[in-house]
Length: 388
Image 1 (tube, rainbow, N blue to C red):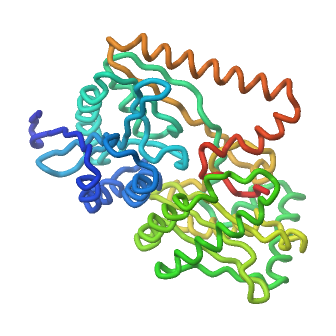
Image 2: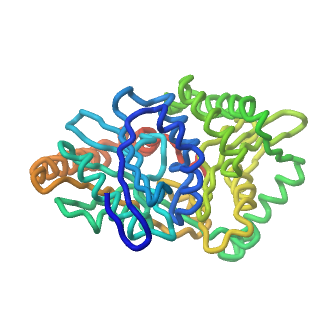
């Protein structure tokens, strides 16, 4: 407990799922007040994720309050392999991690969260993956009094939050002409886009996943995307997020049949596509699916000042057609001073794994091809713009 002129600061550790569920209203309010929050820090996403993937007894959420008002949160969970670690709640199917801090009380929130996390990590290393360069988690990292380390993580591609016409104007002349021609073909075919209301989310998600499986048939689909727990999580979380204006599920209809569907999420400053499915026959009709999807997602960014349209993780060549900016996420490791040897051991493990992956990529062509196809799978939430 601490007190300054603005009121009393308290820090608690939430370890009970029912208690976390009860935080929904104040968590959502904090999420809206945090300028760096991504959709993957929303209560709807995290609570639903825990119902599908959480392990009883492993929940660790650090909460900071000023005079009872929630001003900061670090959503984590405990794992025991390959060593005791506190890792982001939301797991491998979340594209970004961040802490939540009240934009009007940032310094106090970070100070309180640092103290609370220092206590919570008394026997563990904190391993925070996929931290965006502008994330509030970097403030926590800088304030950390013990051992710490920062490493590169995934590369993401980002565009400004602008309508498709503005994005095309950023392209070179010939590429811009091709993009406009692709849009004209989509319109000439009569493909219609409809957005699912809350009561139709479950059916639309089911259609999306069925098309996604069809699209990847025989080509190494992410097995997690076919599991009931993944479907249940998407339906639960997306219902709430659609209701709150944080998600959209779209279906693309041609001749009365749904031939494609996609799911996108958004927060105050970031909009991104999460997953899509497309009938193979749509490509046979020479429809550029990536352009079709990007136009609809870009529409969601209208009116967003200084926001980004994220193509999510991966620096595939096809994304460069749109002239995006490459943004490299960070992996932040934290530990108490007395646990620095454990943190250095974790660094060694990660370095060895990265070296092995580079060796496979450079020396075994077949494995390289499969690694390129599957590299995003453990992280799920695949960036889908233009993905086959």
